[in-house]
Image 1 (cartoon, each protein chain N blue to C red):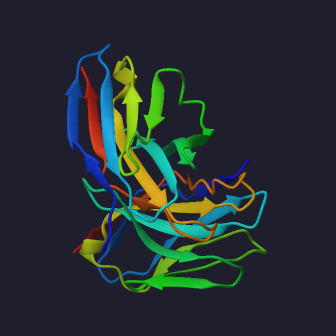
Image 2: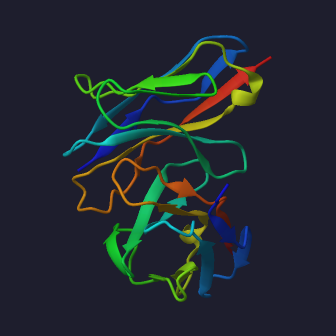
Length: 114
Length: 115
């Protein structure tokens, strides 16, 4: 069964460093998303990506964040200068065309900023 | 804007008890509704979905019915097992959200099932 793949599964970084979280969405999907889940809290929307551009973003997704789909298969989230409060589980998701289709989620990357 | 409200957890039950997790929503359009489950240390998995009023989604003994009149999508299971212990997220995807159909999640409800 096709699945969304995220790497790495766990990343530890020092405050102020840049990190890149990687995702390989399901191949025929058109919509891509990044979500964040701080430990024990709600799943928060960060950004959606369609047709090679950001279609929507939340207030969390400030200038420190960027996304790219560099080669037609990978979908990356970059945090330019990490802060302690960026520590969270980051989930990538993708979905097919259509409002009634479900989003498929990856297993997540646990980011720890020290 | 769109939002999803779930009952507070944790919900603690004995094995074979009946489960209800309440979920209500607010949407500007005509949303599709989903329940996702997150087992400890894992990602989000789709449990079931419903795309129009009065649709019933079901999977692994869980059911939820799309009630437009009460804007609700409550999750039920007749007899829970220890292996059902997880966090359950109600979510919607709204046709009116500019075409991105961004899934919007509730806060999640933790279910703990004791033997």
